Image (cartoon, rainbow, N blue to C red; front, side, top):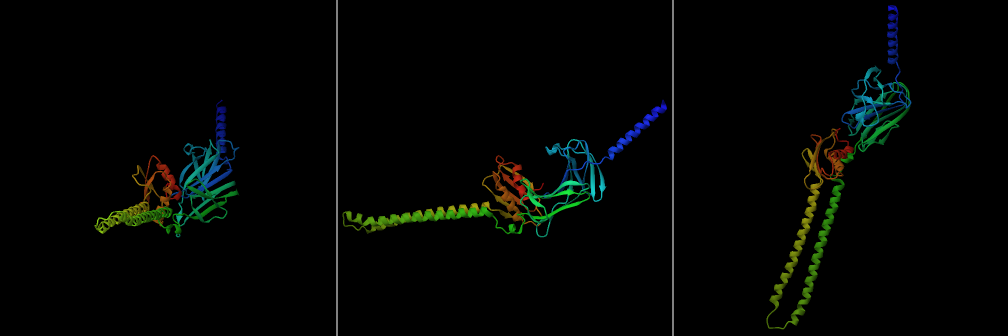
Length: 393
């Protein structure tokens, strides 16, 4: 009896060992598609590698994703397709294969997985443009691989990998991407580009301060001057015609009046200066009003144009006090022109409802914004500046 129990125990241990070995040696499921994305517009780049299994794949399923060797892991887990906060992380093991770190894990709830690692931030080149590159090696055959580099909205591609195109993303970004079909195991893939931003392009730095706003104000100023001149001329002409009419009626009145032997010349001389004095006073009043009107427009021009004071550049969008203020950290490339940077930020803020004022500090790389809290929120202010690519993540 004891021999039978020993034989049964040995058989059980052997079966458990075989089952464990078969599980450990199970080949990972093959991806139907892999997306390799570099978020290059952030101050610190992030590389995302996500894999999609075929719809018929049964769960749980063993899987693996690879990233460049030595990459710092930020997160790895399953993608459920809803809120990102609900995506569960997975337990994993890491091995090395050539120039890649391979993460092994089990999918239990979704057919899609993603790994996020740190990557190089965009490089500022000597001509003021930016450069980003992305490399990834397929360890197994993949029917379709999409590679993309995320850049700020409004970026203009200077040079790039042939076959890749710039595609729109959300309101704050775009993607320089290409699709590679039937990728073989061991194939190294790459994507690179150089791009420029309007705020740092040479033409933008030489643009006159104020832009279209200054042109509009100058047009208003010209109209105000024209109106003032028209008013002055009209009043002067009216006064002249009245004076002429009075001069023409005075002889008739003198003839109709009975002569009492006295000299009327002194009386006429006394009344004429009074009329001309009234005319002069009216003209002076009109001129003063016109000058004041011009001064008001000039003050408006000066108050709405960006004001430079040391390291700060400020602009007033509307009169009055701001009921809410917010400070935003910026990520401005070294060497960027402060005036051009401020102009780009101010142009983006101009469309925000209730915008009051903004001050850009080139030394601290930050901007302080004053606005009406009942008309806009801090999130809306941030979203308005996102397309410039200067807002720190």
